[in-house]
Length: 262
Image 1 (cartoon, rainbow, N blue to C red):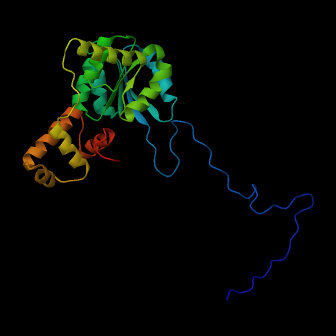
Image 2 (cartoon, rainbow, N blue to C red; image 1 turned 90 degrees about the vertical axis):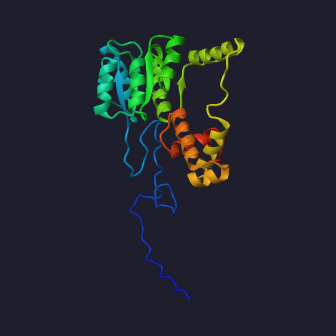
Image 3 (tube, one colour; image 1 turned 180 degrees about the vertical axis):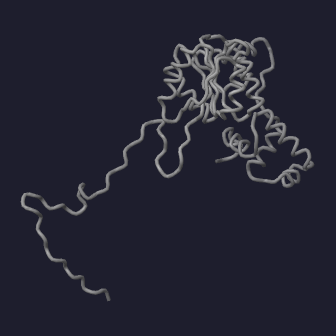
C-alpha cells in the first residue's frame, strides 16, 4: 500500500505577483524555433555545407555568383577558377561536391571540363552556368554529365535551387530547356528515328530488381539460371550506363523507377 502523501507547507507568492497555474505557459517548455529552408539541421550531428568549385572567366560574374551562394547556410564556395583547365586542377586539391562551370571559357571550355571532371571524379555533381539559351549547348551539357543548365540572366532566382537539386541527385532544367527536350523528342519520332524507351535491357532490369532486393550474385545466378560471371557483367554494364558506383546507388535507382517498393 502506498504511503499517504504529506502535503508540503503552503507558501504565498510575493505581494503583487500572481501564482503560476499548473501546466501554464510560464512553466511549459518553449517550442523549438522553426528553421528556415536550407538551414543546417538541428541536433548533435555535424553539418557540412555543400563544397562548390566555381569556374567563370569573368571575375565580376564570379563575385556575384559567390555572393548568392555564400549567402546560403548549406552552400559554400571553396575554390574559384578562371577557365576549365584551372577548374580541373582545383578539383583535385579542393575536394568539391559540386562544380559550377561557365559554358564558354578560354583554354578549356566548361563543356570540355565537364567531360573530364565526369570521368575523373564520378561522384562530383556538375551544373552549367551560361548566358546562352541555346539548345545545342544544352544537349552537349547533358552529354557531358551535367545535372543542370542555369541561365546567368536568372541565376539569382534559379541557381540556389539548381545546386540543391543537383545534390539531391535530381536534374534542374529551366522552362526553355524542358521545351527543347520535348521538341527534340517529337522531332525524332516524326523523322522515324529510334527513341530508346528504356535505359536498361529487360534482363538487366531482372538482375537489378534482385540486386535491390538484397540477393547475392550466386543467388541471382541460380534464380535466373545464368552464371555468376554473367550476373557480374550485367552489374558492371548497369553501373556504366547509369553513371553509378555501387550497389546502394543501384538500389536507390530501382526504387525510383518502381522496380521495388521502398
